[in-house]
Amino acid sequence: MRRGNPTTTHDRRLMCHRHGLAGPSSSRSICDSRTSGGARRRTIPRALRGTSSPSEGADDGSIGGSSSSVGDGAGGLSGDGDGAKGEEEAEQQSLASLVESTFVLAAAGNSYEMGLKAFISTIKEAYERGYTVPALTMEVSFVPTKTAGRDLHPDEVELRSVWIALVYLTLENANWPQKVQRAHEISAPFMDRFAEFVKKVMNGAASGHTLQTLKLEEVMRRGAEPRTPMEAAVLSQSMRIVFATLDLMKEGWSG
Image (tube, rainbow, N blue to C red; front, side, top):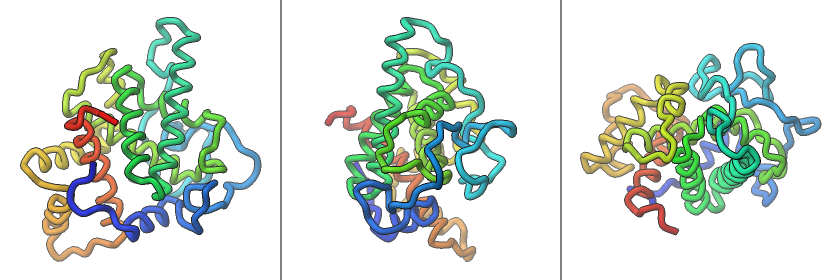
């Protein structure tokens, strides 16, 4: 699945420190055993909420700035509530549970490749069914099972939303077929935030670049301007999500 040099343990550790994933290894948490304090709450992720919506955790550490959002508004997961309601709700809950568990598996780093592949494949299924990004994200926040052994920290919730956005935009730019056509609902909430980045990575891949050469090209374009280790880790991780999605397309999403 991977292209170029694999992500190093150092890269993943940098990502963990940025997004609240760092700490001693544990089978019951993403990277540590800390809790977010107090009882678990069914709240709307910060990436989805408006100014008057409830929050999940503190109002800081937002990827892309505190004023940006991955989506606004939710509604039904498929966007319109059509079809057999009971069957649709069961389908929604099943997909949401898979998103919740596979994200933790990938973010933990212990089973990165397997978890990332499973996560992207689950998001692809949601995309094919025409589920909106905001509603999918909200449904995942309501999953009662906590694979990490605790509620995710705000930055972890935001990171999960970013991963979903990157996969959706990659599929859309590749004209991946949908069983239910709702492209405008899928892309509009975060088009300005990620569209140009995803197109640049996809164009680079189409031109023969690997993940490693495209990353180096981006660093060179900045000239003498220094890139912090954290900036480099975030850039590498986001590019890897796009490249991994493209690889799975080529593989036909097989095992």
